[in-house]
Amino acid sequence: MIYKLLFILALTLIGSSSNEDVLEWQENVQLKWSDFKGEPKDLGDIVAITSSGISFRFSIKEGNGEVIGFDTQVQAHFYPKRSWVHKKKSSDHILAHEQLHFDITELHARKFKKEITQLNISKDIKRDLNSTYKRINKEMTVMQHSYDIESNYSRNIIMQAAWKIKIDDALKVYDDYKKHP
Image 1 (cartoon, rainbow, N blue to C red):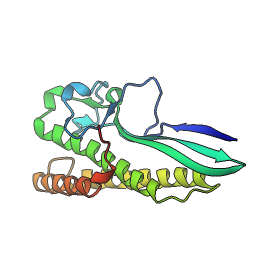
Image 2: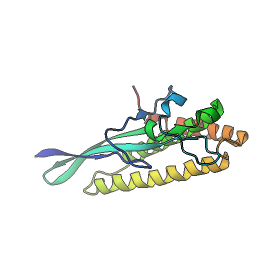
Image 3: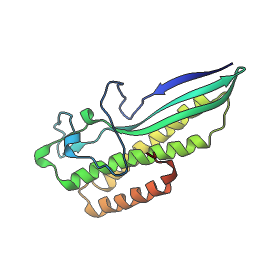
């Protein structure tokens, strides 16, 4: 007897609600300031905050008490209601900085997809998927922080440009793992 057990994990850096509006990362679509729908907070010099994360779901196929396969779905999401901007202080340059945060999320979604293809089907697949997801999220958090520090939150224009090249190149490396229409 074969049956599917569906686990839905819509985990993000901050958490997720199933009723929450999300934008899925798309190659030829850039964020607009109108996508930032959250209430701005007074955090000193911070002009905008991007809330994004990786969600995934998986189903496990079992037969005769053994795992015989699994399917996954992985997406990079932007959360409009948790993302905000002080519109009077905004600029195209800062928007490009925020877009790169979303691009870093997509990069890690692709890395996760690649690693999923390398997992072995076993009774431990649920554990393996979850531990891989947690590790990828930690790596993404470190990169997001490094990006902000090295670019001085977009103020270091040279480093901002260097990060743009770095992330664009990395996305190309993982091109086989992007969502195809």
